[in-house]
Image (tube, rainbow, N blue to C red; front, top):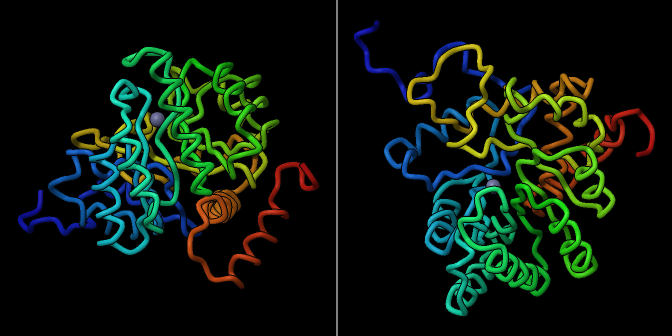
Length: 305
Ligand SMILES: [Zn+2]
């Protein structure tokens, strides 16, 4: 125990102060969650200290999307998504649709979502979910924005809906991918992106992911915490409160890289470059070219994919 109050960056146990070998983009951070209300700035400082310098703040309904956008205007390196989560699909109305269309005018809103299908819990009926999802697909098409998609136990329906929209939408990422190899390849065949979380760090339910993450081409793979949810189960130290945060992303990258048989640096560089292209983030052009070359070199299997 120390008498001095811990500084903002020091509030993580020593063993959890990671440092990414290259800057990372966390493509799914729920920083508008109430658990971050008391210490948002220290959370951002810890993220930066760990090398996680760009965060896509997930907006899951009108209120949270507005909050996510406000944060993006306040802090550099933050961007927002705006959508209605499938759990809340029953609340989709023309008013919500209009509010979303308004949000998409702001250049710091970089994707439509989180939206999609969750037949695991069915908090909204499957019909309500499909209705809200299709409306958001139309908004993505109209606004030329990529989609940030949530799918749980709905792989087949999701693939067939996305297939029918594929020519109209620019890009889509299936975030927090946890399904099987067959579903993965259905998504890759549609030229979709895949977001991976610390689910793979879970020895109880993440095993199947270890065998299939090497199937994902580098230029389709992005990483995310989905914080405050999904704290990795195999962290080298206990975390008081068990709240997940962006500063822990390097640990997840290390784990995914291990199962892909590549270095942490390779995955850090390629996932960040992929995210910058996917969300069309402002970036130095020369740097982007370098990263694109690196990404090609680091593709699993070495050659083309
Ligand atoms: Zn989700």
